[in-house]
Amino acid sequence: MAKHDLALLVEEREQQKPYTLTFRVLDPDSPHEMLEAMQTYHEKPHAFFTNYLAELQDIARAGYQTKNQSQPIRDQQKAYLEAVTADRGRQLFKELLPPSLASFFWENRDSIEHLNIISDETWIPWELLRLFGPVDEGYEDGPFFCEAFALARWQKGKNQPVETFSLKRPVLISPDDCLNYQEVVTETLQSLNPNTIQLRDLDYRALIKLFSGGEHDLIYLAGHATFNQSNPGASGFCLKANLNLTPGSLSGPCQNLGKNRPFIIMNACASARTGDALAGTAGWVASYLDAGAGAFLGCHWNIAESSASEFMVHLFEHWAAGQSLAQAVRAARRHIRDIDPTTWLAFTLFGKAQAEMQRKQPTTEAETTHSRQPTAKPRMKPRQYKQATRALTYSRTGIFLGVLGLFILGVSLPPVGSINLSTETPDYKGPEPLLPTTTPPKDQASGAQESKDTNRHVDQDTGSQSSQRPTLETNREAPKPTWSVTFLLPKHMYYPSVLINGQKAVIIQHLGMHTKIQLPGAAGSYHVLLKKEDITCSGTYSISSDDQLLIPCD
Image (cartoon, rainbow, N blue to C red; front, side, top):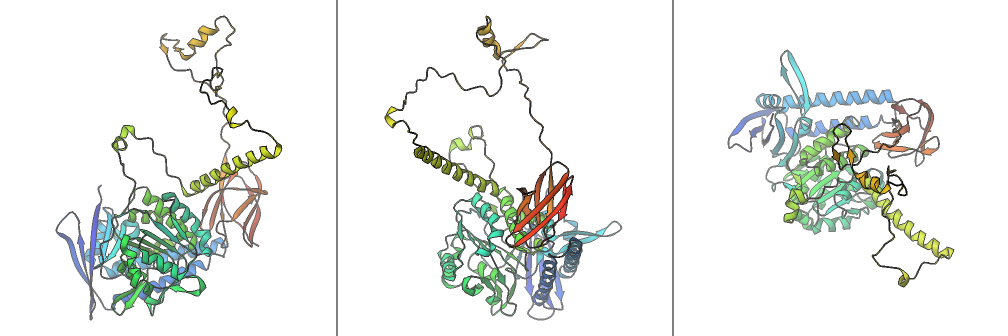
């Protein structure tokens, strides 16, 4: 069934009680409204959602505090967080939306792909609305809005969001203490554009100069941020020397930031929270959109750095693979959902849901002809990119050391003038065969004729000849079985080193508080040692299959 892209227009009227929101559903392909409805509220919506997000902030913080507890306790906490967020989402769906609009989204939950919400406000967490509705014999639970739809929002009255991002001049801004988590994001961005600029020295003047230049079309900020509820314009992004970049800093020359309509990503706690200001709303969202940002991605509450980094990696990979921006955000959410029951819901996207990442277009007639195009090489994954760079560096170093060794040993190389540059090579017999040949020796009587006929194969039944060689059977060893074992880390040991029986382990994946390694498929006793700075985890385990283990730490 074909899916549709819809827009939801929300107009706020809260000058006096009763406070009201008017909702209109539009189909971009139709000049007519599909639905219009109004909802009244006894409490000022902005004040309600300020308290609502503060409560979710406390719930998320409580979840992070159990990460050092035993696995059963963490499982209980995860189940509790999932249940609480689902309850809050259903409550929001029921109380925020008019009944006719709630029914519309429930009945069309499987037929809507992109949903663009254009609204006066910036404080409703649309991602958290949880669909539910009637079925044959009662009510049924549905997905969150951010699961059901490729969702994005935009503030009414701002410049139109950007529909295509080129990512020609991306810049990544992150402090040194976030290196463990942001390294994979850096590799991903460099695989998309090797000219990605990295800024580790978080100097206030340097950032103001960068923003004022307006040269970048992607600005990725990862670090520590705080939200000032009483004065949102004073919320801070932490810099060195105990200084803060604030939403108020994005004024004056920093308004040039919007020259290239950049995509702003603030991978930091509570970076999407907003509050009342003298004229409208204040916070990072309002400041960046006022400065001309073409899209903004931030967080409603505190997030886990490891999960947030994984989220960003998968966002860029899905976006570069051809999905729309909102589809890529949704795919990244799904990836970290089972790992972190709160971080996956924290992100909110301001922009065009259908926004694309611009890819290189053919420039010549030959490139536009499919038959002449070379086979496209698959894009390197971030870790492959890093390994290839290392291999190139090692190969160059090896050549240099080899020549230096010959010089030290006194081995003389022939002078340049004595090297024969002639292309005539009469004694060259061709390359050695890679596989054993069935041609008999030439000194046999019929050797010449048999050698001539080795390129022909006679079908014993029909007598017909084929120009194909007979297939040569080779004795290839069957691949040895392996097991993948996932270790659940009870402490903040992101990206640890792993030794198995004293040997460096083959690491398949680091993901949040999980490290998956590969073991030879042989039953036995394995001593496992995980180290990260001053933290050591070890244990001896009897392993005979794929497994999931909890490692105790010193």
